[in-house]
Length: 360
Image (cartoon, rainbow, N blue to C red; front, side, top):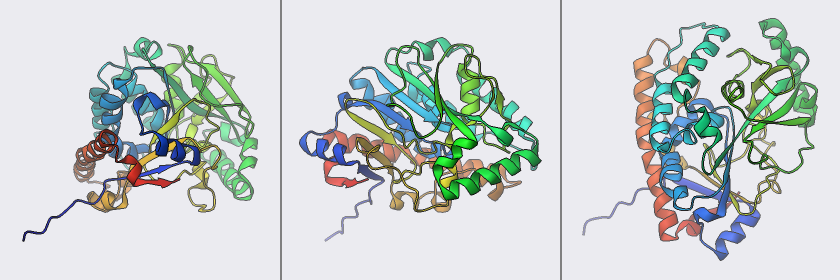
């Protein structure tokens, strides 16, 4: 007899307490989804490209309805791409190719990375601003932070010292980050941000416009020391704005919505802030995540990729002076990610998603 080899699952799917119960009673349907979060994580987003294409290109359009897309850093760029056209698959492919083909000289300045990022966004989205702001059902939300104290400076010495102080304060308690930054959410004019009252940090909400859309997206991905801060986003409180992932790395927020929150994510856990990456005891709040259905690549799937992981920013160092090698590895990961999308579609269409569900 010939042995039958079954491929290990490409996806890990976890659900919060209330979502778990809901999906036991009723299979997941596009009509259940009103909010989709997108985490910070740079090139990791390329490794989700096929999953995003399936969700936004095939699955959610089956039930057109108002949906909030809320992202920090690359998460906001993914969602701006999705909302910028009636062909989200093409825009997601364009985003992946633009990101992959970026090349930076060793020791590149923050100002130069910012300049290239502006060109990136203009190439991806220029001319699409009105479409994004008037999309029939997607409502974009861009998460940023407004810098306070020494984090307002772009001089390396002061900014480094400010970051060291913020990291030390965060080790004691996450709430101390409020001395260094405040949260900003720029949201679609037609719908408020999909969160209840934010009391963990000083926060403000601002309406997205043609004037502030691209500056907000640039700010949302402006990693300190890597890119320059964005000064004075039109319509927002004055100040220097930076990467939304500093406070809201994986968007552990008090969501307010009527169904489940579908979360296509790089990993099967939620890390609250950027400085919490090295703190294994800092994890997302179970109450805030009770409606989340988190869909992530499985360990078995990651083991099949180049370097056995999703693309990440360290690859620029790993493949220094070998851009072609890095691009080859990234394109392979992007191509493989279609498996993630195929598996998601199969699980939702056959009703077998509940069989693989695990608690978040």
